[in-house]
Amino acid sequence: MKKHISKLRLGVLASGRGSNFQSIIDAIGNKSLKAEIVLLITDNPAAFAIERARKHGIEYLIIQPKKFISRDVFYEEVSRELQARGVDLVILAGFMRIIGKPLIDVFPNRTMNIHPALLPAFPGLHGQKQALEHGVKISGCTVHFVDEGMDTGPIIIQAAAPVYPGDTEEILSERILALEHKIYPEAIRLFSEGRIAVEGRTVKIKENVPSEQSVVNPRVREFI
Ligand code: GRF
Image 1 (cartoon, rainbow, N blue to C red):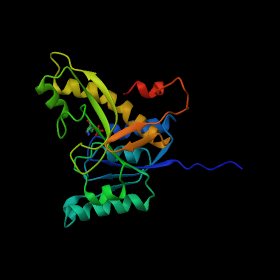
Image 2: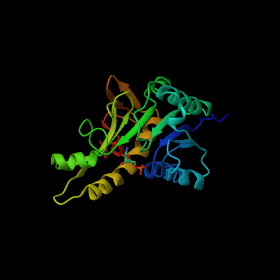
Image 3: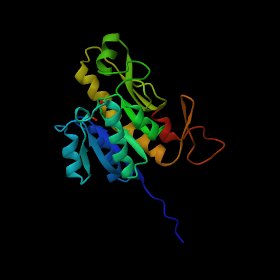
Image 4: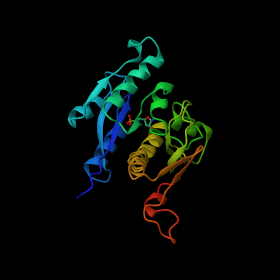
């Protein structure tokens, strides 16, 4: 009898444009990622991510913190909706808030975020602008697990982008965004294949096919 393997169930949290959300929709669509987006939650009724969810028939909820008596109660509600749909992994895709304990406690090492800088450098808002102002020659993006800090959780994968003289924040952001759209689906794929092990604050990527020769799968090496 064929063993039934259920797809990874994703819940996405987004506040804005949602291009990373789209990159995950596309990776699922072209079958490079075996997963299913079961819910989009946004805190912003004007988020373009909502249009993307509608277009692709993805259920969405608008949940605004101002409608709750406290931040914790807001996150309890978010967490409850995700759990009600059997979400395995929570994906922050441009969700412009620090995540609260009620969500992290339910999804420990099961909540990912993407940040537009090479963490631990330049956490918080405007990572690309911070990198330019600091004068770094290389920046990039980071997918990490979420803890209660600001972009402080264990790093899963990173991709580097050069910074050229004359770059503006907009130009650098575009260069980094193209990489974000590659590494976020890749990180989710690693998770879906059960290949991510968190040891303290370090993430180990397990080999796909055990082999004495290969140290890291070449597809992963591209991104680390
Ligand atoms: C991205 O730059 C991401 O790294 C950051 O917020 C931005 C979201 O963009 N966390 P989008 O909404 O996915 O297009």
